[in-house]
Length: 163
Image 1 (cartoon, rainbow, N blue to C red):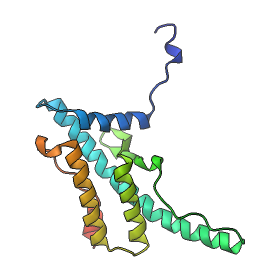
Image 2: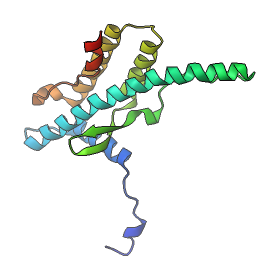
Image 3: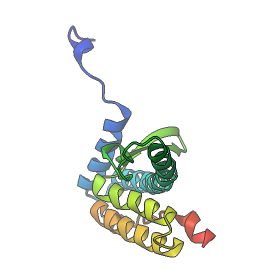
């Protein structure tokens, strides 16, 4: 350990999750290690998408209650729920244990909105599933999963079974 190593800031789980996703996007080649990274990121992305959708669903439930409390108290109602930068990061269960997964905001935002719309009954389960699949396909293209014969990102599979 060097003299100034104590001043180095360790990367937290969020930074590592983002770095893993961004590395997977940049990686190319035929190595098994490249394929392994892409598989891991794709699997984690599926879980993150599901968690973000569920957050969107839960946010509407909390929002309705917050509006009623504000109106009853004579206050202005809170703003409608929307995704934030923190929405991109979710704690997920992996075969190695709990981890933080990440997807870029450009994908997290529409998935969060889908959860809100689904819970608000503005879209059906099938519409939510189809739109989530489109978002996942864009993400899979960005990660170049087809070039590695990696299983595509398949979010909201539980929703498909329930509809």
